[in-house]
Structures are given as structure tokens and as C-alpha cells.
Amino acid sequence: MPQALKIAVPKGSLYADSVAALGRAGLDIQGLSDPGRQLRVCSGDVEFYIVRPSDVPVFVSYGGVDCAICGRDSLEEAALDVIELVDLGFGACRFVVAEPEAANRPADADYQRLGVMRIATKYPRITARYFDQQGVQVDIVKLHGNIELAPLSGLAERIVDITATGTTLRENRLRIVSEVMASTARFVGNIASVRTDPRIRELAQRLGEHK
Amino acid sequence: MPQALKIAVPKGSLYADSVAALGRAGLDIQGLSDPGRQLRVCSGDVEFYIVRPSDVPVFVSYGGVDCAICGRDSLEEAALDVIELVDLGFGACRFVVAEPEAANRPADADYQRLGVMRIATKYPRITARYFDQQGVQVDIVKLHGNIELAPLSGLAERIVDITATGTTLRENRLRIVSEVMASTARFVGNIASVRTDPRIRELAQRLGEHK
Image 1 (cartoon, each protein chain N blue to C red):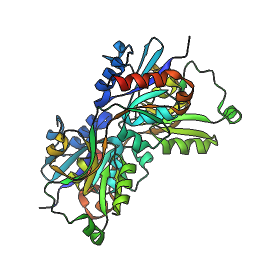
Image 2 (spheres, rainbow over the protein chains, first blue to last red):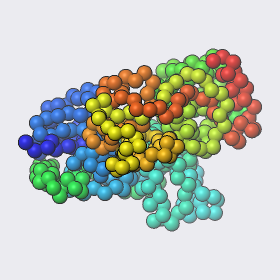
Image 3 (cartoon, each protein chain N blue to C red):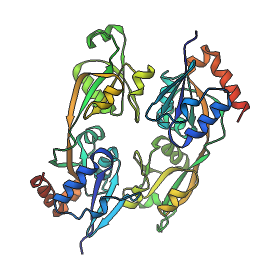
Image 4 (tube, helix red, strand yellow):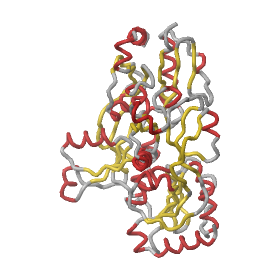
């Protein structure tokens, strides 16, 4: 009997679509529909690990799992070695720069004369890359959650965050200043596992065929 | 009328005790008892911000708030400039090194011959400092949550995590190998705010008197 294939599934907003996609690809996903507090679900020769989105790239690249479903946002921010196999299409969202609606602010270029703009984000790497490309100097403050509190409290002038429907931005009276990048869910594999275990490319093919 | 005093209160396990302590110190905490989705609560000349524990040191040191209640764990990990004013005593927990109960592992010293031990943790700075002090070389894998999945999946041999009652460790069949440090909740202030706003030291004194 072969070793169990270990698959990480992201908690949170991508979870339901990820489980559905794995089901359409022929895996037994019964144990995933209501796992409760259980974070490891065994099903035949597959072991599912239910993992925080931002931790998925870590589990894949360090070999804690063989493959996973993961948002492009988490992949880009982690910048770890994994093989991207399929763009699954769901989980579409955008990275945006946003600021308070009430703000009467100078243009980006004018900030250079006025001092350095402070940006709060959960994604310091993506944020730094974006403003580097724009040639705008910024001071990045890394937060773990509730980024909308940063402009509210005066911690930062702007934020870089993910938005799907824009509801959180509207609720917090933030308006989009510019777009950084778009993201969808991807199927990714550990480099060594993809080379040695044919089940991963087979699963990738079925996931691609049944999008 | 003076500017509002901005106070950060940590979400999660320290929240209830923090609110109670601020109430005993004479602040109007009515709006904090059931804030719902609201993360800013205004009460007279005080503004409360309900913030993720790991983000509290960021808000204090960058001046998003004037003062805050924060666990020593988050303070040590953030290593940012804030002034610690009172040890509030509640929220006691310990940082421990843990491994699977089933593990039949060599002593720390023997790992040096066998290769580098991998440690998963939410607290890479505290973990690095601890193993440096022990003179043990380790490979630290930073995760954002559910650290107990790391030894379960084979991502890491051991973890460094916080435990209050030990329940999560027991549920995941992990045993404590050694203790790293102890933590309690602290009242802390922004450096400039403590210098310029006497209300912070007054609040510190009342918090200390009514522990």
C-alpha cells in the first residue's frame, strides 16, 4: 500500500470551493464537510490537513504536505519554493491600496516632498514590491488582522489589503486608490513530491478538467 | 477639551480580564462588554481600539494608540519600543517546547550529530533567542496558527507555543520538553505619549492599585 497522499486545504473563505473542487476531481471529501475541531482528516489513502491560508505555502515547501490548494495572494507573500500546477479560477479577489473616503490627500508623487507615506498591511512583501515598482517610497507597517483599524486610529495613511466584494472597505469608509494585483486559488505541489509521486500530476489534471 | 486618550485592548483570551481591569481603574467600559463587529469604541474622552494581540505592540510603538494592555509574549516577540508600566498579573501562560508523546527522541545535544532539529512556532524571535541561549542549532519554521499540525504532519519535530492550561497540548498528544519563559498581561505606553500625557501614568497607577 502506498504512503498516504497529504493535501493541505485552506481554512476560511477558500475552504468550501476547495472542498468542492477536490470532490469533483474524484476524492472522497465526506470527512471535510463538517470536520469540527479536527484539523487532520484521513480518507482512504489521502490525508487532508486544514491549514491557515498564510501557512499553506510553508506546509507545501517544507514537505509537511505533498500538495495543496492555496490563494495566489498567500503564495506571492510567502515567496517559497513550490510548483504551481493549476489555476483553479475560484476565490477571485484583488489587492488594492485604499485610504479613508474623508481623506483629502495629495497625489502619490507629492508625498515625496511631504514625508514618507505609511502603509499598513498583512502583506509586506507584496506591498514593498508594488511601491518599489511605482518608485514611491513608503513606510510599511505589518499587521496580522483588522487592517481597517490602521487609518481609523491614525497608525497609517493607507492600507494594502485584499478585497473580494468591497464590503469591508465600504463599511469602514475606505476608498480604493489603486490596484496592486489580482488573485485566484491555485493547486500547488511540493517540488520533491511532484517529481516522485505521479498521483499529484494526475490530481492536477482532474482538477483542471473539472473546474 | 483634551484630545481623546487612545487605548488598545487585546482581542481573544486577554479581552475579558483587560476590560475588567480598565473598569476597576475607573474607566467607563460599558461599550466594551458587547462591541459586536465594532473595533473602535468611544466613551467620553477615551477611545478604545480592539486589536489582535500580536498587533498591539505595533499600534503602541507607532503611535496608533497612546497606551494598551498587552501580553508579555506579544511584547517580547515584537521587540518594538514601548514603555512597560504595570504587570497586571492576569493572563498567566507559559512558553514551552513540546513534542509528540509518541516520539522516542534523542536528547537535545544528540541532535547536533543527527542533523538540525526543526521547530514550528508563531514566535520565531523568542524561539531563536531561547535556542541560542541553549547553544542548540535549530531550523525555525514560522506559522500563523494551529501549530499542533506541524508535528502531526511531519513538518517539524517540535513546537514552541504558549500554553495556559495545557488542554490543547494534551488533545494533540504533545508533551512538554522544556520551558522557555512565562508571560502575564502588561500595561504599556507609547514613549512620546507617556512623556506628554499625564493621564497615562495616572491610569497606570490606578491599574496597579486595583489589580
